[in-house]
Length: 219
Picture 1 (spheres, rainbow, N blue to C red):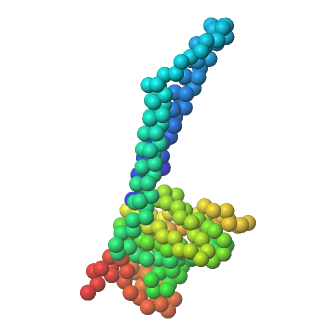
Picture 2: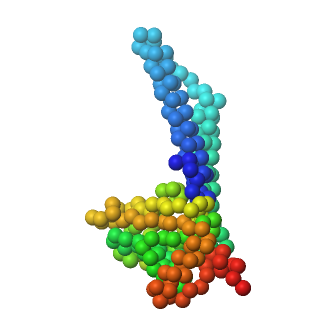
Picture 3: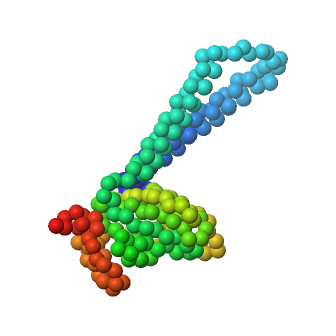
C-alpha cells in the first residue's frame, strides 16, 4: 500500500484512508456521546424521567452532516470509477480469456500467452471474457479489479511506471482450484518488450506488427 504502480493506486489509497478516517471519527464521536449519556442520564442522577423537547438545530445537524459526508464519499468513489473506465486513445488492446483455472492473454496479432507482458508507461486496454463461470481479474498493486463473465466483454485499462513484475489473481470464487488461479504481469521497457513480442510472434508463427510506442514511431 502507498506505492503507486498504476494511475489509480494513489487515488484509491487516498480515498480509502479518508473513508477509514471519517468512519473512525464518527465511531469515536458516537462512543464518547453514548458514554456521556450513560453517566449524565443514569437512574441515580435522574430517578424520575422527564420529557425532553425536540431540538431543531440538532436534528438538522445530524441529518445534514452525514448527508454531506456520504455524498462526498460517493463523489470520490464515482471519480475513481470514472478514471478507471476512461480508456486513453491509442491504448494497446489485449484480450483476456478466463477459464477454470487459468488466464490466457491474446495480443493483436493472435499471439497467446499465459503471462501478461506489457511495455512500461503505455496505456494497455484489457478486454475480459470468461469461457465458463464468473471470474474476476485482480491486480493488487494497481488497485484494479474487473469481472470476467461468460457471453459479455468487460474492459479495464492501466499503465505502469517502471520495469517490474506484478501478481494477477482471480478475486471471484470459481471452483476447487480458485486459489491457484494466479499468473504474473511483467512490465518491460519499450525496447525489451518489442524484442520479446517479435521473438514470441515468430516462434508462434504469428505476423509481427509493432504495437504501442513502436507502432507510433514506425514509418
